[in-house]
Image (tube, rainbow, N blue to C red; front, top):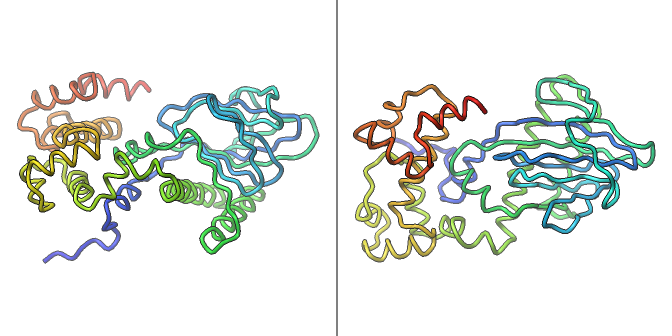
Length: 318
């Protein structure tokens, strides 16, 4: 009998968080003096974050009230929307890519800007999530998540991590870029966990379904083995429910019927693999349980909107 993987979370929500593996697009240390303003463009499929290490600023996202950020605050702009960081609300903001920068490495840089007044230092970054479970989760997040660690046993380590990150950014010793990027990844995941724990919106929809004992288990099975020939009957049997009761509960909690969810999940996995590897479309069809490449192509176009060959060419061009 095979022993379980001790690193695999045993709860469906924990497993979804386990898939939040990030690939960094860029990280930077920003050194600003008032008055200053930074206009960040939209970055589709990315999550952007800002850590305030010294000074203060305002975060402006369209459709949201301006939010003040203080030292130790962590702000996530979860869907890659364009936004502004400014010394005072309404201040003129320079486009990100118009600013002079000091390139420390391919993915780490230092930005400097301002009029010589009060200092504000930030650590900023944009990260991308590649797993379909991560995409599903990110779409459910609010536009902005703001974490303000307050002294408590649950948040002391966050404040300590932010201080450690600030010290590394200040000196950038050998290996400092690696330390900062790893700490940033952890902080982003912790911020998402904090939102799930405190926001009622996380108790409904797909996230709520993951926390349901039976539907959550069914989702976990689908995520782990998407190529299996799933039917309503086999899924219902796995979670000890009748076929009709399971079908109704799945649709109620997830928002789509189980078989539609399975098809869509497979195609999102296929889209990720098309972008990341040179696997042939025929091999991909086989890996996801399709008996023919033609059947796979039809399913892919139905869910994604374009044939798989087109999706691969678009990804290569991007």
